[in-house]
Length: 182
Image 1 (tube, rainbow, N blue to C red):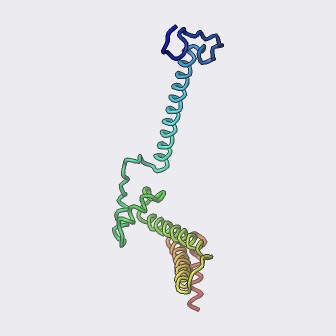
Image 2: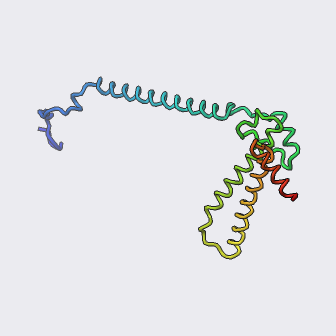
């Protein structure tokens, strides 16, 4: 006997049943690692493919690649030189569908149509604030703004009719002019 030692002097043999983790071969662990690696690779490949599809869709929608800057046509440049803000005119027309293929006469119609759409959107967005509580001065300013937007839409609509008269609009205009002289 060994005196001065704590515990048993002879090694204890473990006669219990081994746990599944102790009996599991290392190959199962390796298989799990390989499976997770393959799953991660498939996930990364699918993500890369999705990014490629989204970039291609954006390129097709925009008409050019994202890195290339579109240049204005000669018609756009000449038309926008006559405006107060030529650079704003050019960038707006470059983003508008059909403007790159349009001639100078068509650009007048396109710019009026683009302006009509933007003023209409402004009127729609501003009308969402109608139910907001406002003091007297704010409500008066809001009402003036809404009225000016509405009048602007009417005048733009009339301008669009003049710029691109339809076959039925031309006789009506002539009849109106003749009636005004009587």
